[in-house]
Length: 454
Image 1 (spheres, rainbow, N blue to C red):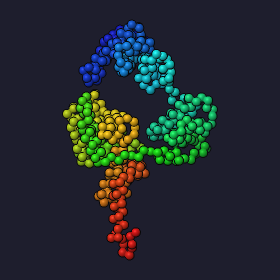
Image 2 (image 1 turned 90 degrees about the vertical axis):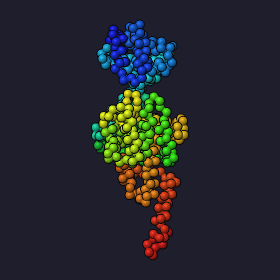
Image 3 (image 1 turned 120 degrees about the horizontal axis):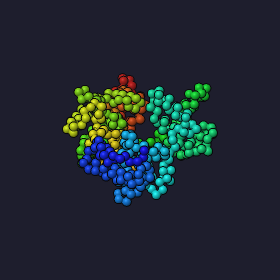
């Protein structure tokens, strides 16, 4: 049934009433969007694609293009709700998204707003995953590795890219695997792509060896990965003055519609610098992970499936106390499963992408990062800074950092110290302290009787 329900007006009222909308004006926008679509559906006698195109053209004469797209997404969610309740048979936007394997409803809406929607939709068409001649092999291998407990996310992305390439090159059907990999390697001339092709070759060899144990194993070639490593951007090590500047900006972050954002960003920066947490670990932190009595936080099921219990400095605990007090004042959920960091709209927790975007804005406000592009210091460089400053402090305290590296690796959640060594960036201060340590060790007063210090 594609016709608009007879009680459509009441359905709209009920739908808007059950939405968690925080601002008094928001239901007006929702009502305006849904009511205008209802009128278009009644005139056309249906809720299908043609009605949607007619409504988009009609609204485009009244609203700005961005407003039409926003209101169309409201309509799309409403149509999904009608489908779930059995009021209508299907949602045209969702149908088109599945048909063309598009990434989002917005891309479908933009295509329907063009002069030639069919052509615009065709340009959106994406190959369906794992439908190339090698698709079944790659899908089976990825699923097998995930059943064994591996996340295998990066390998799955690599396989999907290769699968799309094969679907776009039907002329290569039936060619040997070595030929397919050769053509794929020539698709891009970057060092990253060459390294990815090497990983792909090992993945496919592993999959083929599972089906045929007599097949020889492919020896790894580490040269492409080393070439990529040589081109990596050097981490930016924040100075204490930089850290103070970032924290001051976070405290006064301009956010009139979200008053809790400054204290949230401030505490995120404190944990990123004082505990070396990754952005994903900050986003997943829940109230149940924070133990104020023992002064620790639990980081659960993070990278490499590792969990760890981290003692925090007193300054970091003070920041968490202030945050939890602000949560009480804001009357936010105290459920142990609730995220530590919340924003004022619907009290939902910050996701990884929003944390990254907001902290990058802080970096730009501090003039540490250009206003556009991906150049300049990164949020992840705070983790590098944590390691360098920790080792520098050990030198100043007379502690041998090499003896402490296994503990530092555990604190950071690394599998071994080799991963931790990547984070050790030699700065002038670190070099100076290391030279002082060597000078003290090699001074004549420390030489054994009969020995000459060189």
